Image (cartoon, rainbow, N blue to C red):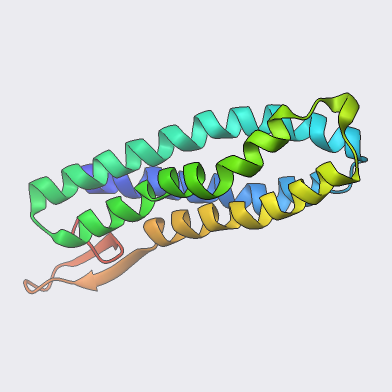
Length: 154
């Protein structure tokens, strides 16, 4: 059961991250420079709280699934979803801070030049979430069919 919850949390994380890349970011880029930044700031703050929580929760549940099952693939899935934290802190945070420090009155074409690569960097989070949530059906030695995170046992 704990493995299923880990998978669900990773899937919710992945869906939210992919939504940002496929719907929110393209719509944001249709706005003028000032409105673009005005939309990005609150969306970023809300998304940060939601996605950070989902990544930690999924990673902890995946770790618990590994602990209780002994299957190391749960640990791999847990590590992949947790990788969003260092990826965000090391790769995305410089861009996030730059955009967050820009006031709406100072927004310009340069701001847009940071928001565009921000979307590309965010796709890395979408990829990590999708890989972690990539439940793969497989058969165990006992013949039982299971669905798992990156092939880990449920």
